[in-house]
Image (cartoon, rainbow, N blue to C red; front, side, top):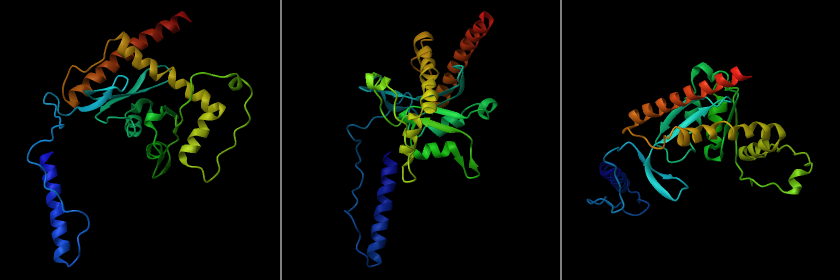
Length: 243
């Protein structure tokens, strides 16, 4: 960190000097050399420097952590997994979709994610390539909705007007999730991926990584996901046998 700050300071100084030698007036304040002593609030994790400080639990405290990601299919099987050091999910949509096993990746037509994953750029990467559309449609929540229904909500609702050509990508996405097909499809997210993480935490008891380093933590997460899938496949087999 200190080396990077020193290099940045030298670059700014050199640019300022070049402007002065060219007879130009440098803009902005004079660059300040970095302090030789660490910031009192600076933190460094010596046991696992590859991890990052992230909000944890209900968001009221912070922990040194990795961001564990999983893609789940309609049978509640994990079809893709990875870990990252991103403190939130804003840039995790495309990499996590890319992590889906090539065995099933060609069958993916819809991707359901919560608002934490949404950004116009991320959706664009998943839905389009330079060669054209990928055939995958992203359904992402972009608005907060109450979990409680009123009497008015139970009455027939007027038809939704399609967004005009001037509508933003966010407005188009919001409209899509308000349509009956969109609402029906998005409901599947709650009964697929959310229970998977609940089972991993509460039933399997996995709540923290025991290994250190991104590569080892990634391997640990892979083993957890494989273990979960074996457990889930055993359950599915019994369900089929009982049917």
